[in-house]
Image 1 (cartoon, rainbow, N blue to C red):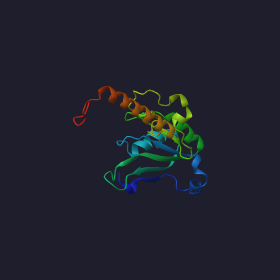
Image 2 (cartoon, helix red, strand yellow):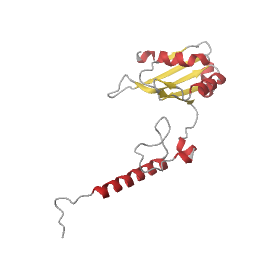
Image 3 (cartoon, rainbow, N blue to C red):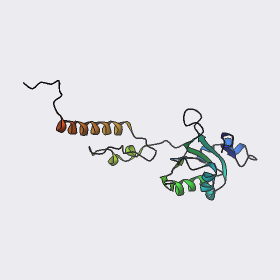
Length: 169
């Protein structure tokens, strides 16, 4: 689909409803696979209520120009419809990836801050622990870097060989 078709408005008769506190009816949908199109997204969310608008975001510059950015916004007619869609679709697999669905106005709190027991503590972990959108708190990043450095130092000290320029006296 072209960028011109990236914004659908299904109900323009009641244009005031788009302005009046739409944030409680607008959902952020993230972690979208690049194969998911606007039409597929609308088909996935239309069973939960009337979709008033849909914003599917595209890369506008650079090497990925014209490709989907991996997230979109959908606005429902009522707050109840949006809430139902959020409850039913958050975490649901789409093309092998769990969808991230939340109200667009929600403040985002990474899992590591919301649940301190999930912080990085194992020095052998090479991947970062975070939520499905790949973000993590500053303290979790620092802990992950420290653990990785410690693991590298441990590996390096056991494998350390004298360099050619070093002389043993």
